[in-house]
Image (tube, rainbow, N blue to C red):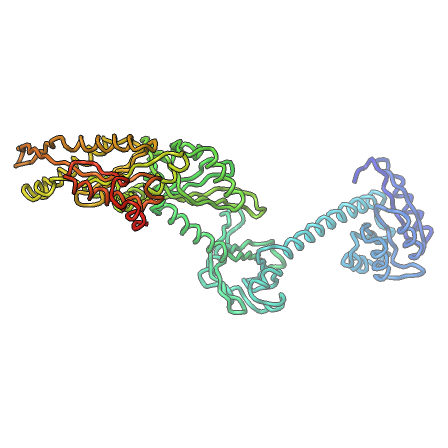
Length: 570
């Protein structure tokens, strides 16, 4: 109580002399200031409290309109927060004690003591009331916390359950706290868990810091689950030592930890490279396979950006499209050419996903990739073998047909011409029969090189099989240019071929082979409008060259009955 403030006292006393004496004893204080209000009926006292606030009430229990403990109950209802000191007669000390038990802060016997005693009693009553209110508020807060706690809370005596909060009731499959009366924790918690809790409860405060222990719990409904539990001794109460036991269901947490360990194991042992970035694309985690594929260690890349892997082979439009898919769909999958730490460029198949939180905000990006350079190379080799001659490396019939279709379309677009030269070697069979297939293969390889060197880079030389070749050459559309190309090829093939024939280790001899060729020429668009017709006509012209004595050119337009041959080819 602040001694500099005024203490307002309501004196409820129907004896005028006693009332004046009490007031006089309070006002005689030199260190404290009192403001006294006197009423002689309970009804008047209740009305006065409704109109004004008092620091304390001095209450006589024998009033004209009330008597005994009923007076206290009525006054407490009228002023529930104001401390009450009972004024009782010499023969009513027992009643004074009963008054304290009924909620009063103290009592004073009339005619006993002096002003100092009375003032001290009032000070103590006010202080005690504040303390009781604070304790009550604390208990209310504690009770509220217990009621809404996400953990199960039990209050036990000798590990017999006295109280269970709503979460504990729900956790153990009950309906109300009464379901746990006359039950002990050992009815729900495994024996090893109960043993640890009892050891925890036996510790004196401050000896060891209590900690949660794991245990198995089985509820009233038969459901078993994993839990964490802790036992905390409470203050002694009438010789008993209450124990507060807190129980926490950790089933979901253990499952999450299991999944996390599994995910971590997959991350660390996966043969595919994995990379995690934050929302700003800063690399925060990579797995061992990432290092194996890229050559970069975690120390090299953590905190950096994925662009450090860039090979420079993709333009800005490629990456803009990638990020648009990630933003719109949360996922992107495709192939990216990247660069290893040693500078080697490789291709990887990549799957990138965005990770969002509960507010749908992106928090991470997760990339999984594998090196498919060898796979791509093998696929290209398969494709190459399907479209190229195995011996010479020239386009085969399949690729020739495609190239010819493209050439026809290009010639039409550019309004130019094409010459299709069907080439059949003269004198190849005797060389092959005399010296064997090995020499024959060497000769065919030499022929293919001379043919390629005899046309322009945009033109095509293909091998149809055996000793037959086809050239597709872009021309100005004139017969003269097609003839120059054909004569150039004939001239190159008439030159002797020097073939190195191995005889043994570090020994070889050179065989000289002389051959020639017969060439039939078809022109686009003069002779036929499509690839099939042009090839057929060029083939007819080649046979005409053979019949003319070999080593010559023959054009489709020079063949007898050209119109009938053209019609037949179509």
